[in-house]
Length: 273
Image 1 (cartoon, helix red, strand yellow):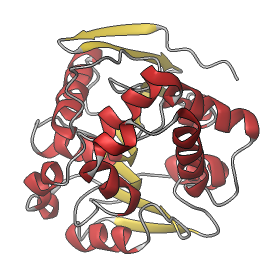
Image 2 (tube, rainbow, N blue to C red):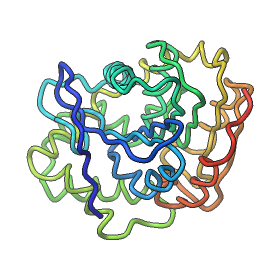
Image 3 (cartoon, rainbow, N blue to C red):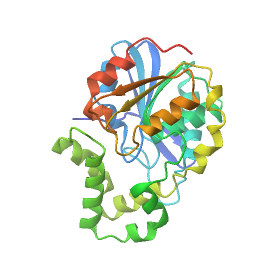
Protein backbone atom coordinates (compact mmCIF):
# COMPACT_ATOMS: atom_id res chain seq x y z
CA UNK A 1 0.00 0.00 0.00
CA UNK A 2 2.70 2.45 -0.97
CA UNK A 3 1.22 5.94 -1.21
CA UNK A 4 3.69 8.76 -1.62
CA UNK A 5 3.05 12.30 -2.75
CA UNK A 6 5.95 13.36 -4.94
CA UNK A 7 5.35 17.11 -5.35
CA UNK A 8 5.68 20.04 -2.94
CA UNK A 9 3.99 23.42 -2.69
CA UNK A 10 5.32 26.05 -0.31
CA UNK A 11 2.90 28.06 1.82
CA UNK A 12 3.61 30.56 4.62
CA UNK A 13 2.63 27.83 7.12
CA UNK A 14 4.67 24.98 5.62
CA UNK A 15 4.89 22.58 2.70
CA UNK A 16 1.80 20.94 1.21
CA UNK A 17 2.59 17.66 -0.52
CA UNK A 18 0.59 16.68 -3.57
CA UNK A 19 0.66 14.52 -6.68
CA UNK A 20 -1.01 14.11 -10.04
CA UNK A 21 -1.78 11.08 -12.18
CA UNK A 22 -3.50 10.27 -15.46
CA UNK A 23 -4.57 12.52 -18.31
CA UNK A 24 -7.79 14.15 -19.43
CA UNK A 25 -10.15 16.63 -17.81
CA UNK A 26 -8.85 17.62 -14.34
CA UNK A 27 -10.46 16.39 -11.14
CA UNK A 28 -9.29 17.24 -7.59
CA UNK A 29 -9.92 14.99 -4.56
CA UNK A 30 -10.13 16.75 -1.18
CA UNK A 31 -9.86 14.72 2.05
CA UNK A 32 -11.11 15.51 5.54
CA UNK A 33 -10.11 14.80 9.14
CA UNK A 34 -8.49 12.81 10.68
CA UNK A 35 -7.53 11.25 7.36
CA UNK A 36 -5.22 12.07 4.45
CA UNK A 37 -5.03 11.59 0.70
CA UNK A 38 -4.40 7.89 1.44
CA UNK A 39 -8.20 7.65 1.45
CA UNK A 40 -8.06 8.04 -2.34
CA UNK A 41 -5.59 5.18 -2.94
CA UNK A 42 -8.20 3.08 -4.81
CA UNK A 43 -10.35 5.88 -6.23
CA UNK A 44 -7.60 8.08 -7.71
CA UNK A 45 -5.92 5.44 -9.94
CA UNK A 46 -9.29 4.32 -11.27
CA UNK A 47 -10.29 7.90 -12.14
CA UNK A 48 -6.85 8.44 -13.71
CA UNK A 49 -7.75 6.07 -16.54
CA UNK A 50 -9.72 8.91 -18.11
CA UNK A 51 -8.98 12.03 -16.01
CA UNK A 52 -6.05 14.05 -14.71
CA UNK A 53 -6.36 13.45 -10.97
CA UNK A 54 -4.88 15.77 -8.33
CA UNK A 55 -4.50 14.64 -4.70
CA UNK A 56 -2.93 16.43 -1.75
CA UNK A 57 -2.64 16.41 2.03
CA UNK A 58 -3.88 19.45 3.93
CA UNK A 59 -1.31 21.15 6.14
CA UNK A 60 -1.18 19.31 9.45
CA UNK A 61 -2.15 15.99 7.83
CA UNK A 62 -0.50 13.05 6.17
CA UNK A 63 2.76 13.86 4.39
CA UNK A 64 2.36 17.65 4.56
CA UNK A 65 4.15 19.72 7.20
CA UNK A 66 2.77 19.83 10.70
CA UNK A 67 4.10 21.83 13.60
CA UNK A 68 3.03 24.08 16.44
CA UNK A 69 1.71 27.48 15.47
CA UNK A 70 0.13 26.47 12.17
CA UNK A 71 -3.20 27.97 11.17
CA UNK A 72 -5.31 24.86 10.50
CA UNK A 73 -8.71 26.55 10.40
CA UNK A 74 -11.17 25.98 7.56
CA UNK A 75 -10.36 29.53 6.46
CA UNK A 76 -6.67 28.66 6.13
CA UNK A 77 -7.33 25.31 4.42
CA UNK A 78 -9.55 27.04 1.86
CA UNK A 79 -6.96 29.73 1.25
CA UNK A 80 -4.32 27.05 0.67
CA UNK A 81 -6.63 25.10 -1.62
CA UNK A 82 -7.16 28.24 -3.70
CA UNK A 83 -3.38 28.68 -3.90
CA UNK A 84 -2.98 25.09 -5.04
CA UNK A 85 -5.59 25.51 -7.76
CA UNK A 86 -3.77 28.61 -8.99
CA UNK A 87 -0.46 26.75 -8.90
CA UNK A 88 -1.84 23.86 -10.94
CA UNK A 89 -3.27 26.26 -13.50
CA UNK A 90 -6.05 23.92 -14.58
CA UNK A 91 -9.18 25.68 -15.78
CA UNK A 92 -12.35 24.80 -13.87
CA UNK A 93 -11.55 21.32 -12.50
CA UNK A 94 -14.13 18.96 -11.12
CA UNK A 95 -13.86 18.86 -7.31
CA UNK A 96 -14.74 15.92 -5.08
CA UNK A 97 -14.75 16.61 -1.33
CA UNK A 98 -15.30 14.53 1.80
CA UNK A 99 -15.75 15.41 5.48
CA UNK A 100 -14.22 18.86 6.25
CA UNK A 101 -12.98 18.82 2.68
CA UNK A 102 -16.56 19.77 1.80
CA UNK A 103 -16.34 22.97 3.83
CA UNK A 104 -12.91 23.69 2.34
CA UNK A 105 -14.23 23.24 -1.20
CA UNK A 106 -17.32 25.36 -0.53
CA UNK A 107 -15.32 28.22 1.04
CA UNK A 108 -12.89 28.12 -1.89
CA UNK A 109 -15.75 28.29 -4.37
CA UNK A 110 -17.96 30.85 -2.63
CA UNK A 111 -15.52 33.07 -0.73
CA UNK A 112 -12.15 32.57 -2.41
CA UNK A 113 -13.96 32.84 -5.77
CA UNK A 114 -12.28 29.93 -7.59
CA UNK A 115 -14.25 28.24 -10.37
CA UNK A 116 -15.09 24.55 -10.68
CA UNK A 117 -16.57 22.55 -13.51
CA UNK A 118 -18.76 20.61 -11.05
CA UNK A 119 -18.74 19.67 -7.38
CA UNK A 120 -19.37 16.37 -5.60
CA UNK A 121 -19.84 16.48 -1.83
CA UNK A 122 -20.11 13.23 0.07
CA UNK A 123 -20.55 12.74 3.79
CA UNK A 124 -19.21 16.28 4.01
CA UNK A 125 -19.19 19.09 6.52
CA UNK A 126 -21.09 21.87 4.78
CA UNK A 127 -23.06 23.88 7.32
CA UNK A 128 -25.70 23.76 9.99
CA UNK A 129 -25.08 22.55 13.54
CA UNK A 130 -22.16 20.17 13.01
CA UNK A 131 -20.20 20.93 16.20
CA UNK A 132 -21.45 17.84 18.02
CA UNK A 133 -20.50 14.68 19.88
CA UNK A 134 -16.83 13.89 20.44
CA UNK A 135 -15.78 16.79 18.23
CA UNK A 136 -17.55 19.29 20.46
CA UNK A 137 -15.99 17.78 23.58
CA UNK A 138 -12.53 18.14 22.02
CA UNK A 139 -13.26 21.78 21.22
CA UNK A 140 -14.43 22.53 24.74
CA UNK A 141 -11.81 20.52 26.64
CA UNK A 142 -8.70 20.47 24.46
CA UNK A 143 -6.40 20.71 27.47
CA UNK A 144 -7.90 17.53 28.94
CA UNK A 145 -7.56 15.50 25.74
CA UNK A 146 -3.99 16.69 25.22
CA UNK A 147 -3.06 15.23 28.62
CA UNK A 148 -4.55 11.78 28.02
CA UNK A 149 -2.10 8.94 28.60
CA UNK A 150 -0.83 7.58 25.30
CA UNK A 151 -2.78 4.31 25.59
CA UNK A 152 -6.04 6.19 26.23
CA UNK A 153 -5.44 8.55 23.31
CA UNK A 154 -4.69 5.60 21.01
CA UNK A 155 -7.89 3.85 22.11
CA UNK A 156 -9.92 7.01 21.50
CA UNK A 157 -8.54 7.59 17.98
CA UNK A 158 -8.88 3.91 17.08
CA UNK A 159 -12.51 3.90 18.19
CA UNK A 160 -13.19 7.13 16.30
CA UNK A 161 -11.74 5.70 13.07
CA UNK A 162 -13.74 2.49 13.41
CA UNK A 163 -16.90 4.48 14.14
CA UNK A 164 -16.63 6.09 10.69
CA UNK A 165 -17.03 2.88 8.72
CA UNK A 166 -19.87 0.42 8.41
CA UNK A 167 -17.82 -2.41 6.91
CA UNK A 168 -14.81 -2.06 9.21
CA UNK A 169 -11.21 -1.18 8.41
CA UNK A 170 -8.64 -3.79 7.51
CA UNK A 171 -5.86 -3.87 10.14
CA UNK A 172 -3.23 -2.47 7.80
CA UNK A 173 -5.54 0.38 6.74
CA UNK A 174 -6.44 1.20 10.34
CA UNK A 175 -2.73 1.28 11.19
CA UNK A 176 -2.03 3.67 8.30
CA UNK A 177 -4.68 6.13 9.51
CA UNK A 178 -3.79 5.74 13.18
CA UNK A 179 0.00 5.89 13.20
CA UNK A 180 0.43 9.62 12.33
CA UNK A 181 -1.55 10.57 15.44
CA UNK A 182 0.43 8.48 17.94
CA UNK A 183 3.30 9.50 20.23
CA UNK A 184 3.68 12.88 21.85
CA UNK A 185 4.03 14.71 18.53
CA UNK A 186 1.12 12.89 16.88
CA UNK A 187 -1.19 13.37 19.84
CA UNK A 188 -0.45 17.10 19.92
CA UNK A 189 -1.05 17.34 16.16
CA UNK A 190 -4.38 15.50 16.44
CA UNK A 191 -5.94 17.90 18.95
CA UNK A 192 -4.23 20.94 17.40
CA UNK A 193 -6.04 20.47 14.10
CA UNK A 194 -9.39 19.55 15.67
CA UNK A 195 -9.31 22.54 18.00
CA UNK A 196 -9.14 24.97 15.07
CA UNK A 197 -12.07 23.63 13.01
CA UNK A 198 -15.04 25.86 13.77
CA UNK A 199 -18.68 26.01 12.75
CA UNK A 200 -18.40 29.79 12.37
CA UNK A 201 -16.28 29.24 9.26
CA UNK A 202 -19.16 27.48 7.48
CA UNK A 203 -21.80 29.96 8.68
CA UNK A 204 -19.87 32.56 6.67
CA UNK A 205 -20.98 31.09 3.33
CA UNK A 206 -24.30 29.38 4.16
CA UNK A 207 -26.34 32.25 2.71
CA UNK A 208 -24.59 31.71 -0.64
CA UNK A 209 -25.33 28.00 -1.08
CA UNK A 210 -28.50 28.61 -3.07
CA UNK A 211 -26.54 30.71 -5.55
CA UNK A 212 -24.10 28.00 -6.61
CA UNK A 213 -24.37 28.01 -10.42
CA UNK A 214 -22.52 24.83 -11.25
CA UNK A 215 -23.63 21.17 -11.19
CA UNK A 216 -23.61 19.70 -7.68
CA UNK A 217 -23.87 16.06 -6.66
CA UNK A 218 -24.43 15.06 -3.02
CA UNK A 219 -23.61 11.46 -2.08
CA UNK A 220 -24.17 10.06 1.41
CA UNK A 221 -23.75 6.81 3.28
CA UNK A 222 -27.12 5.90 4.74
CA UNK A 223 -25.41 4.57 7.92
CA UNK A 224 -23.12 7.57 8.47
CA UNK A 225 -22.76 8.03 12.24
CA UNK A 226 -20.34 10.95 12.06
CA UNK A 227 -22.61 13.13 9.88
CA UNK A 228 -26.00 11.37 9.87
CA UNK A 229 -28.36 11.58 6.86
CA UNK A 230 -30.08 14.77 8.02
CA UNK A 231 -26.93 16.66 7.07
CA UNK A 232 -27.31 15.49 3.48
CA UNK A 233 -30.91 16.66 3.50
CA UNK A 234 -29.89 20.01 5.01
CA UNK A 235 -27.45 20.52 2.16
CA UNK A 236 -29.91 19.42 -0.53
CA UNK A 237 -32.52 21.85 0.78
CA UNK A 238 -30.05 24.73 0.38
CA UNK A 239 -28.75 23.79 -3.08
CA UNK A 240 -32.09 23.14 -4.81
CA UNK A 241 -30.62 21.90 -8.11
CA UNK A 242 -28.27 19.39 -6.43
CA UNK A 243 -28.69 15.67 -7.01
CA UNK A 244 -28.77 13.54 -3.84
CA UNK A 245 -27.66 9.90 -4.00
CA UNK A 246 -27.88 7.53 -1.05
CA UNK A 247 -25.40 4.68 -0.62
CA UNK A 248 -27.05 1.92 1.36
CA UNK A 249 -25.20 -0.09 4.01
CA UNK A 250 -22.32 2.40 4.05
CA UNK A 251 -21.04 4.80 6.68
CA UNK A 252 -18.99 7.97 6.69
CA UNK A 253 -16.05 6.52 4.76
CA UNK A 254 -17.50 5.62 1.37
CA UNK A 255 -13.93 5.19 0.10
CA UNK A 256 -13.68 2.20 2.46
CA UNK A 257 -17.29 0.97 2.64
CA UNK A 258 -18.40 1.35 -0.98
CA UNK A 259 -15.52 2.36 -3.29
CA UNK A 260 -17.10 0.76 -6.35
CA UNK A 261 -20.44 2.49 -5.89
CA UNK A 262 -18.71 5.81 -5.19
CA UNK A 263 -16.54 5.43 -8.27
CA UNK A 264 -19.54 4.66 -10.47
CA UNK A 265 -21.10 7.98 -9.44
CA UNK A 266 -17.85 9.89 -9.94
CA UNK A 267 -17.48 8.51 -13.46
CA UNK A 268 -21.11 9.21 -14.42
CA UNK A 269 -22.04 12.30 -16.40
CA UNK A 270 -22.09 15.51 -14.38
CA UNK A 271 -25.48 16.38 -12.91
CA UNK A 272 -27.31 19.32 -14.51
CA UNK A 273 -26.88 22.75 -12.93
